[in-house]
Image 1 (tube, rainbow, N blue to C red):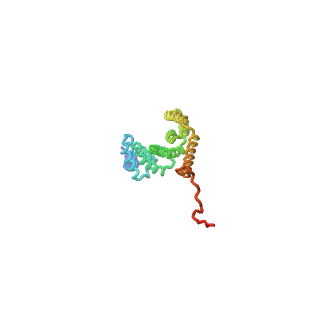
Image 2: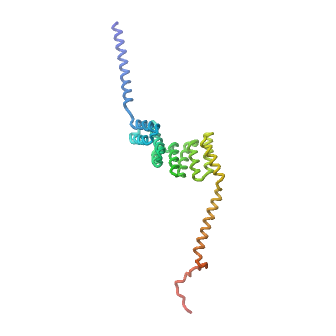
Length: 244
């Protein structure tokens, strides 16, 4: 082999070495540098998928207790709050779920999924009016959020507001035609609305009861046991009258 060819090969090898070695070093840095919060998040998601809700909550807490700068940048922080609240709901820890969701909403105030989960937790605590408010917040971000519409209808039914529940279920069917849950619940709400007394009659009945109670109270105060109405006391009873 000629000297020129040998030098050419050596030069080629040198170029390859200069190119490959930094690339290998870069790959080593990528694979050996881990974001701790992301690691905890991934482990939590694995536990969640396996139905280990308590373990998932603990791992999500570990993620939140770590530096969340990187996981927030790639959007994972939102799912830490969302999925942690889901795990807490599965455990029946509705109060804890609301606390998690409030923390998440402080960072993502318009996220419809966080608001929907909060409404669901409030519903299960019996706070139906608050649940409706949360569902409305979810729908403010996504008016066609079918799940939130159905959940809102459920809360309205609990409040006895059947007509608005019918509206919510109908809107859900508009956004998702043929939705089985919305169809079934709509039929129940329509039946309840048809059998419920009109609101005007309920209000009238309440007014009549209040008036009757007021009359009874007045008569009791003004009429002694003997049946004779009491006379108004003399405003000058404390003064002596001069004899003529």
